[in-house]
Length: 137
Image (cartoon, rainbow, N blue to C red; front, side):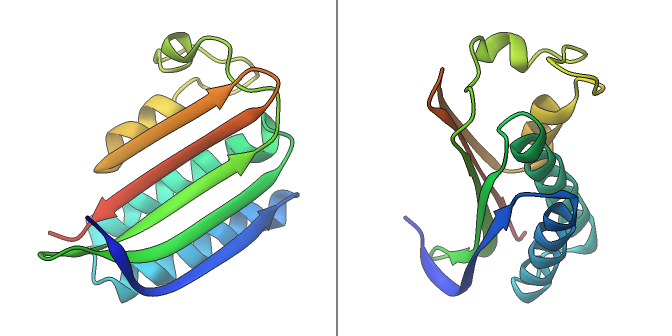
């Protein structure tokens, strides 16, 4: 359905500064894909949360960010991959207000609401991958 439409970059997520770099890259790609300012903000917010989760709960990992297109539109896809402990109860992890740490418990559920496509795969003891896509209107 989609094919690469432009740039693609992989960034490590090992420290707080890396979360900032991911956020900056996502904003730049969202602008290149001509997402509206509202959609840019939604995507940057979602990916910032996911990058932070990758660092905090996954012990670090990578972000793979790319501009994508199909026959009608362009967008940005970002994947967050870690080899951390995984998520034992995915349904519980999507419950607003629930957190396994000290956060507000809005990271995964909030990120899912802000994007057009959201895919999570996880295996306890092996890690988690979250992929999100935001399409231009």
